[in-house]
Image (tube, rainbow, N blue to C red; front, top):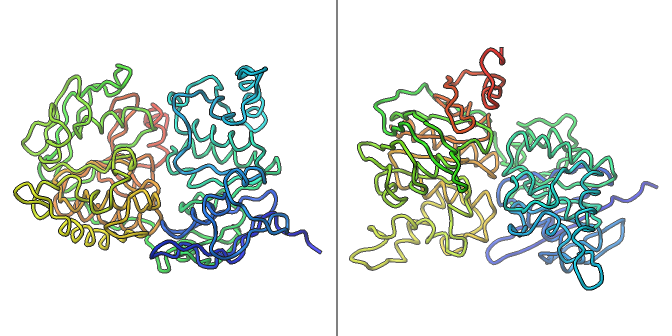
Length: 507
C-alpha cells in the first residue's frame, strides 16, 4: 500500500460576501516535491493557502497531514505542524535587523535578556545549511527585495517548517534574483522539504515544478505533471480560451516628441547620484522601453519624471510644458499618466474603496464633483464601467482595495491611469504580479494607446515584456543610458548591456 501524501486538501470551500473564492478544491502535496498552484488573479490560489496556514477557516472540506485529519485554527497552529508561508507582500519589520526579524517571538535569551549573539549565530548556521546567504546584522530596510525574501524563508525554516508555501515569490524579483530563488528551492527539496509554489508565470512553473494544479474561478481544473506540459496548454487551462503569449502589433508610426528629457541628474535618499546626465525622448505613437537590472537608477528616474522627486540638474518637458520643478499633481494635470512600480505604496490607498481609488486624481473634476461638491453616485458609476472594462475581479466599486488579490489591484491602477487618457504614460512594471490573461489584456491596451498617438515610456525588469512591446529600447546601467537598440535585438545582447558589457562582448 502506497504511503499517503504529506498533505491533502479535500473539497475545500470558502465563501465571502458575494464571492465563492474556493469551490470544492482538491490539492495534494508529496514529500520532497515542488507542487505549483497556477491560476489567474482571483482564481482562489492565495485563499486556499491562507486556509492551510490558518488565516482563514474553510466553510466545507478537510485538511489531512500524513493521512490524518487536522484542524488549523491559526498561523501558530500551522507553524507548530511544520507549515510555513512566505507571503507575496513581506511581513518584516524594516527597522529591525535580519536576525531580529527571523527569531521574533522565539528569541534566544541569556537570563532575562535577549542573546543577540546566539540569534545571529543560529541564523548564520541556518543560512549556510540551506544556501540562503544573508547578513544577520543588517537592517531589513537596507537590504534588497531578494534578500528580504530570503529572510522570510529563513523565518519559516527557523521555526521548523517542512512544508513551505511561497505565494507569488517572484512577483517583485529581478531575473537574476529569480534564478537564485530557484536554486534555493532546489536546495530545500534536496533537504526533504516540500514546496507549494503559487504563481501565474508559466515559464517558471515549467522550470521549477514537479506537478502543476490549475485553478480557475475558484475550482480545480486539473493536476498535471511538468513533463509534457506546455505554456499554451497551461494558459488555456488557466483562462479557458486560447491566449496570445506574444504581442501582435504593427510597426510604429512615430510623430513629434511628447516627452523630452535632457541632461537629467537625480539624487537618491542617501544624497548619492542615482541618475547621471540622462537624455532621451519619447515620440507620439511609440513605446520606448528602459531595460536594466533593478537598482541602476530606474526608480529615481521614474520619480523625477512624475513629480515625486526633484532633479538636481536637467530638464523634463511633456508636450510643451516644462515639468522639471512641478509636483505630482501638476504632472498629472499636464497630461502625464503614471503606473507606479509599487501598487500598494504608490498606486492605491488600500483602505479606500475601488471607486475612491479610481477617482483619486480627478475627484475635483466633473462628473465626480461640481462647485466643490462630491457626487459619490457618479464616482461609483464611473468605477463600475472601468472595473468591467478591465475585468477586475473580487469585488465592486464599494469594495476596499485591500481585499483584492495583488493582480486585481494592479488592474485597478492600470484602469485608472488609462481611463484618464494621458498624452504621455510612464508605465513602471505594468504587469508585475498579474496573470497571463491580464498580461495579454494590458499589453494590448498599451499598444492601442500607442496607436492612438500616445507616448509611452515602459520601465520593466521583464526582458520578454521589453522585447515584445518596445519600438526602441534604452539600456540603463549605473544611472546612465549606455545603449539604444531596436526591437529585434537579441536577449543575450541586451543582457550583456544591462550588466555594463559592450556589443563586442555580446558577440
